[in-house]
Length: 435
Image (cartoon, rainbow, N blue to C red; front, side):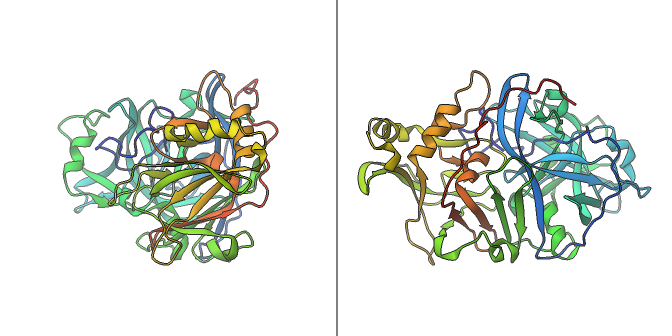
């Protein structure tokens, strides 16, 4: 997840284990009886799409959230939580520190019980400004009413600057957030072992010291949908935003369901585009073009690294960001009398089995609507044209029927929407009351 403070860099603090932020829904109360389905390779999970605030009148932006309920050792379910869906993390983690006591017998241990496993996450441009540490646990979790029987997840013991209810994070309907549901790549899947008997307390400042030891693989929570075992590789994930707002307006598709659903149209697909990272979903953008009425108006190159990507697709980032080199395209588009006939095309690096330069296209008229409606005094933008890289965040998913991450092949494919409908209430008023 990238915030307005950290979107300028892909590489985050070296102590990052999983680029995690913690959210959850504590306003539900006691979790009701839940009818759950068994995991399968064709599973799809419903998501809620909502507008988030990071404090009174401080805009976070649009986001995908999912309800998650861990099962306690006594067989009961803890209150269901709303968690941010974040492809910049592979950790399922909760903000409610009190759960650490309830779940203590489920702690992940290694080396015959001599070590506990912890998450130690520091990220952002300023080391130590944002992060958390917490123990890992293993047990059943229900995500969107689907059972994940052997999930590995974390509960924060200490945090700083994280997006929890205590820090004012709330959805538009007043519901609080307190957790994160990571769907990032395998290279983020690590846990640091710490001795059960400690000579000094673990803190956010020193938890990174333990990461120099041998790390333990941490299963991405979605792997549980394969066959119920945490060591099964997860090869394909797809995310869709219908364009609507509220529950069941977003969807995660897994494995064959990612390309066998009605929204994936092979003939319209852009890509596959090469993914450079097995951690974040990093791609390589080679340039940007402005086309109007079928004519190329402006073209600007983008600095590339032949061995690494320079841009990212991230469900945990709320906005759509272009690097500052795109400003001349925007200026030219605004000066064009027929701007509604213009397009911004993002040139990317393809794979051996695709066009060598797949182009991701954005209607200039739609971008203009988002920029006009997205002027805010405090918080994140809707569309930013001052960054150092291209970031296709949650709002960017509005332009596509579905985006498919093929982790096994190292590529991503996007299916554009025939018509983009910009929400009328793009930036709603801050909720009168929170829960």
